[in-house]
Length: 172
Image 1 (tube, helix red, strand yellow):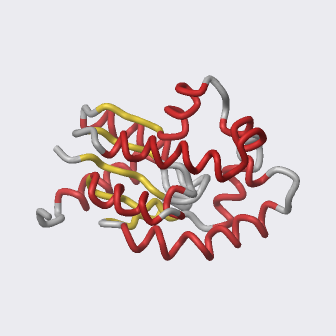
Image 2 (cartoon, rainbow, N blue to C red):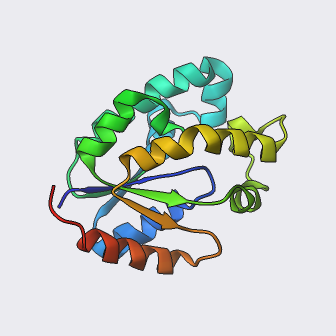
């Protein structure tokens, strides 16, 4: 089986849904941000503080290339993974890409208590999330094989929709 790769904004549920999807399909689950943290021994906010966003994006690009080279895994990516054209090519080539779409309002609700979001520190979260969506939404859509709405939906319902929609796709 090819990989199933989840993309979307922070708070869309990529990690939660990815774990459930992998369990349902009896596949391994990989979260690109968690893999970076394990390799570096540092959390994402620390990497942003020390290396800046550019340094983090370089680490992310390397991790995406490695994860997309695997076979039969569910991969949850970071929200900004689509910013680099190289990553978009790797993701598209690496398996079926599922865009988990969440409204800015839903993202705000889901990220409001999470201190592990470097782009939301010292800022007006709603403005930041809106600006990020404006830039990233077209990029998510560009590479997506399937787009699934996650607003106000239980994760298990989203997982079932992903399975149904992936199974209905023609081979590529």
